[in-house]
Length: 222
Ligand code: ZN
Image (cartoon, rainbow, N blue to C red; front, side):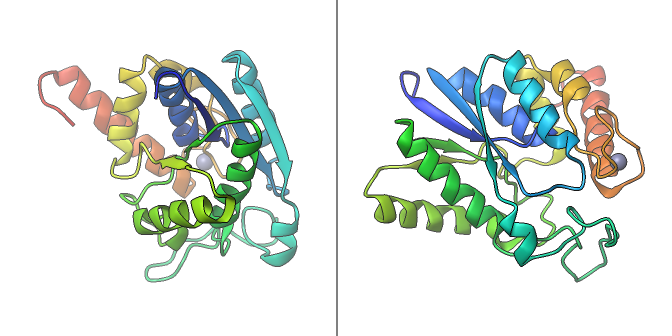
């Protein structure tokens, strides 16, 4: 893969930034694509843009505002609270979002001569998004190859990692501090450690604390 080109689906968050570092290590040329779907925090686009710039990666922002027209949700509408209730999909869920993102990323990738697509989706901290599952990604990979008569390879380096292991991967890639200080995961739009209380911050913080404890103690592997 070293002499090939890859496109990373990139939001400026912890997961996709770790994937971007992973891609930079594994591919000769890397591009990033960010989807603008009127996120509640426009800051997400700015964060993604500045990280891509800092890492010297070509960055494309695609307008996906139609997604909000189809599926109003807590990520794009101030009047819907972010909630996660047991047994229900979180209010941040948008039907088909990942399907659409990966499909558009594939069109872009083919145009720029890349066949590798990297996405930070993960089944471990599974919050019920069906199009983030491994079986879906594999199925879509086949479909995209047939749709465009092209040999795409979708990579999901985080698929089976928990949050602590994702921090460990960032550390192994020499990017732990960068990811800690520059990425935006918080639903309240606060960079780095975030607000500390929203579901995204709690998950990120728990994973980081877990990983740092293990790293300090040494020896034992996550
Ligand atoms: Zn937060």
